[in-house]
Amino acid sequence: TPLSYRDYIGNDDGAMYGIVKDYRNPLKTFISPRTKLPNLYLTGSNLNLHGILGAAMSGLVTCTAILGNEDIIKKIRNA
Image 1 (tube, rainbow, N blue to C red):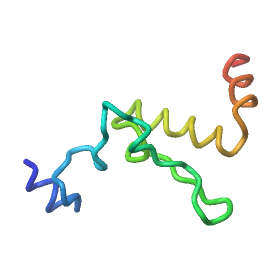
Image 2 (image 1 turned 180 degrees about the horizontal axis):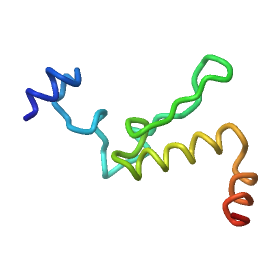
Image 3 (image 1 turned 60 degrees about the horizontal axis):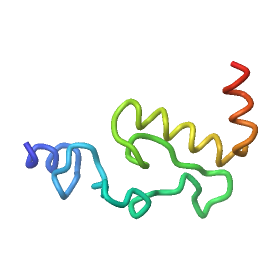
Image 4 (image 1 turned 90 degrees about the vertical axis):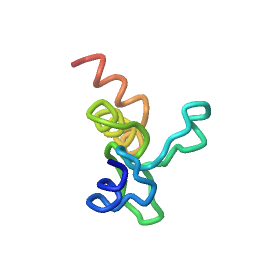
C-alpha cells in the first residue's frame, strides 16, 4: 500500500517507484547524472525511468555523460 511504501522505503508520497514523473512533460522531471562533485555521477531506476529497463537506460545515460555520446554509439554498433 502507499503507507507501506512510505514506512519501509521512506517515500513521503507513497509512490511505488520513487520520484513522481510527469508523463506529459518528461523533461520537467529529468535528473542529470552529473553532480556538483567532480567525477561523481548518478545512475539507477530513480534517476529518470522506473524499473529494470529504467535502470539499464539510466546506466546508458550516465555512460554517455562520462564517455561522450559518439563513443557510446560506436561501441553499441560494434558490439
